[in-house]
Image (cartoon, rainbow, N blue to C red; front, side, top):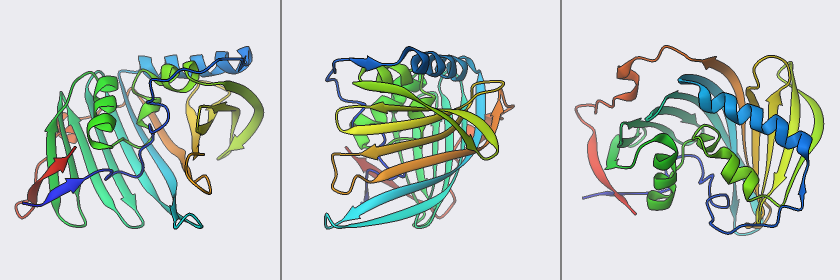
Length: 244
């Protein structure tokens, strides 16, 4: 039987932030923390959310050559334990479903899928996917309910860079530093504090590859049908197994 190896979705976002090691928080700007906390609280309190986004993901080959790949994402979340992600990329087209502890990933390019049981609610499910299979939903840590713990409590520096324009929207530009990973987050300045853009830089790898996601559509408390979180395998699709 074929076996599916992770990671199978974009990149392992939580390689650094999922570490249990703590860092001395010597340089956390209060004004940056205030903006971040408002955005995290807003996202966490939503009962449902549908977003669309463009992403780019860099890979390093032979410690000397960095290539960039890209694509689009649609992500739907319903509190407390349902999620779907539709990923259309340069070299991968995949769908991911999380429905009350049942996780499925379907690779459209090779017509195979794998399924597993994982914990609920959403933040525990995302952590289990990363720990057990090396998988993560694109930007999922922003919406899993524990973003503050992952991105701020373990940071050595968090600062408010200034104001920036993302797709015609004025945004606060926030940046943070973890042990071997830097993150940047742009948050809407007027109205609801929605995420506008998110960038991760992995300093543990030569040439420091980046993952970047720019949110192009955001629907808070969206009406999401139960069927959008349920996977129905194509008749000719082959079920395979994850390798932990």
